[in-house]
Image 1 (cartoon, rainbow, N blue to C red):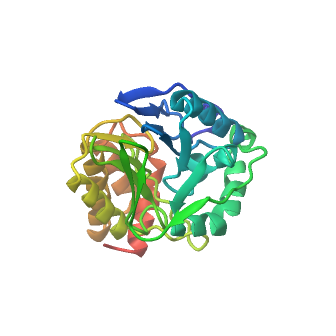
Image 2: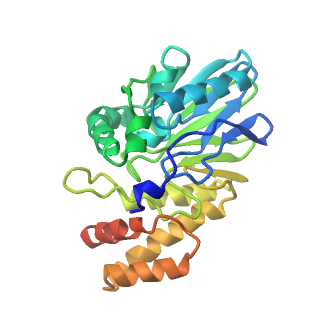
Length: 289
């Protein structure tokens, strides 16, 4: 893991960039524990995708969203329950309609308090960002794989393939514009986060993750906004799928963790967070494809 003293504080720099007409991203600037955040405009409503971590970040995102929305009704959705993506949602409670899938809500209720405690222990900066955080429930939950939101002249699709990086990762898809927000199912130039922490949390499912990635590639997005890293095209998604399959194959071939880590770093010398390679190796040692 990185030395906490060398990592910038996990603060959202709420300066939205318009990446397509009416589609804005608050970029993570490659700061750890800061996600890419989306703001999507329709004629009468605006959808916010993720909040950042803690009440101050959530409030900064809400302020930016209100300025862009210019009086439109606000809706918030979260890509998954992890703290850096959704633990700023309290700022939106009562100011926006909060919508995501029922399985995601159940995972937040079951694991949220423990993740809050775990993240607070990471560093003083993370603890400060999470100061005063309380978890809030969604206003509306959907069942099934897909939920459509009409923003007025623009339809947004919330899509889940179920258990993958978490129990209910959710992407946000603009079918007309072919813009895809992936959450942490896909990150750019970052080794994928494998939250494999048995026995406390062992709900990751690499088969489901790969199925989701393959489906996203088939969607042929023109713009991919990853959970972390720079926006690009579908090559971001394909790169994550190729990496996961490569690690699984190396474990199956009998390579040890040190060998696989060296191989993956040589193959992806510009990718961040190599500490996650070992988690992926341990996962596939326990659960081969």
